[in-house]
Image 1 (cartoon, rainbow, N blue to C red):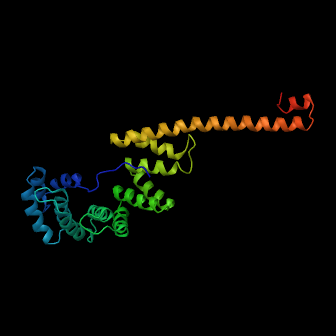
Image 2: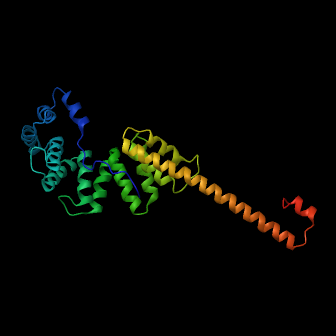
Length: 248
């Protein structure tokens, strides 16, 4: 399945900005430091809270190691902190842990474990996880489940989910007014230019296919009529009978 590749590991900027507005957020100092590019301070402050069991701090600390910000890039250490956060239900950490298992980064590659953590995150509504879970089901030829999870992402307005859903639905209904084309058009109108371009190219390909199929249908109809009329002639039909049957 040809899909647009998104950023694999999430760094939730929206979480940072929301947290900064929370007066009593224990992580606000670390988040402010991170926003200023002071990764060493962010690392030290998040580590304090992470070691005390704060799931968000564990997630943020895992991202520092995953992206090599203020520390050496270390997927083993990242997986350690993502796991601590994920088991507490942090959906972004669950997604990131799933990615590590899917690609074998810092852990042994294990698609079953990847699916387990994607599912945990997807159930909480994370569109990126829903798309990845849909991909896993697609690769297993479980199209009903793939459609289910792609649709959940698409209906949130997720551009990748809209592309994925349109792509898979076109396998079942490629008519010009199909639901597949509706979703692909939505993906084409989204903010990510790479996904929009790919969606536009896919629509062009489908429209080109419409013309080809239409020509094939016309050629087949012409052949069928010729065959039918030839049969009538061989059967001794009169000129008047042939005209009445459209064979003149």
